[in-house]
Image (cartoon, rainbow, N blue to C red; front, side):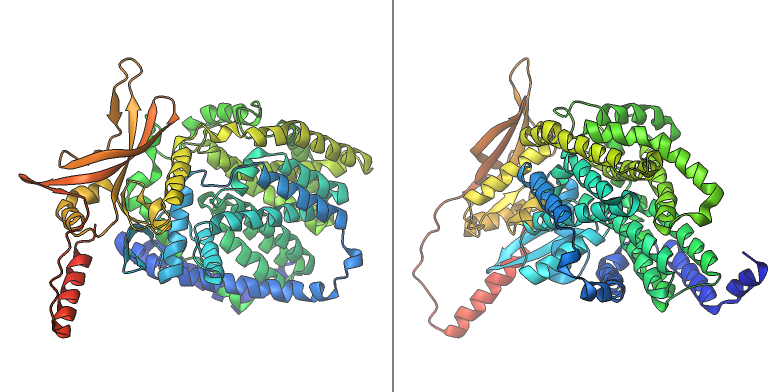
Length: 624
């Protein structure tokens, strides 16, 4: 690029406005607010920041694609690929159990979507009660998880009504969207066989099916990474303001879907610069100039990790002293190999996908090195894919230096999904260089189809990989209890109370119940709830058979419990729901039972109303 063009770019006022916007966002995001103030700010404004970002992105997509949609003709559509996407999507969904798979992530996200829907605030409810037929969120905490998934879920609540099952509906829809985007990527890089190959490889991956039928943000994360990559291709082809806006705002929302996805902003920035260099001028829309300001909630929300050290969950790995360290690499690499090449009955992997992907990686690296010599001669789709490999490499490296980056761990293996997407990109980059003929590509697509029917479907049908995660099974068991008690007029004391609250059941954690024992006595005496229950987990000593309550589940000696239902969901573990039949208040004992009938009613209506208001005011104060 000649020096006059560089000088013209440097003098462009829009570029300096963009830089000023970025500096302002950096100062506000990292230095202007204290930790507590930052959390309050995100809680009260985070919804509106995401809403504005989403609306601007949707607007840019409309400007970019509506003309093409209007010119679209059914005769030109690839209906066979569409049918393949439909069949593969159904296979992923019907062969996996619909339900929460990773308890804390999925339920906390649902809780945040609940507060976004009800109050337009960002917090996860930890106390909720039914007050005269209206379910009210009483208290909550700011969650560490990014905001885009709960925001999208709250939109679904807005248009269909609040239902916890909307999380599963959303991921079901995203499954088909993701497979369609995979087919578009495959077609752009390796023709029609590449589209079929990509769809079949992901359809054979039980891990994708597990998340397609769960309530987490993994599918949306994949969709946003892939959408950003495809919009990068469109940006390099058109190099105009509309395509840049769609590309950049897709990247903003991608960065706010999962924590690690922020690393993909590296190739995004490089591709924006490359487009400017090729165009020999700065291209900036007013929306992109404001984009850094819209990202302010991300660093502010990240303050949670400073305020609550437990957010890193280092206790989950005894001996880990820091979240990221090079000392974890060797161990994590061994666990990665154990995941990618384990038997499908042991891990929700795909041996065909793993073999093809990792064989393709060195060939793709060689293709990239050779392409650097004639980078300007590459097609825009190839440039975007090659630069985006930096993001996939950065993501994999981040996982390998993460203290809990063990892909064969039941909680962590979902983090390998972006790695699988990177493996597909490697296959699609290497395949056309291997042969210009379509026959090898169709052969690989046939191998992927064989892997789907020989390994993928049987592994998904047995879904043994779901059974080892006790919190997930306990969650399903709790939901069965809710289904058997549809009135929802009871109180549940449970340290995992968010699940009950998101299903609009009055709930409070054990410490809160112990703290407010007088309030519970009040409600027991006044028969506020049809019953009061407590969920507890008991560990069984294999030598003596003695049952011991899990730490934190013991209400104390003042509560008299009667087991209602229990089930052994895992060896040496017993899950139990008990009814509170009495609470001791000093020397007296308040028991649950039928209320005593008193026919004495004040004749004066005003006195009746005064008594009713006084009781209701005291009732609200006493809520657990």
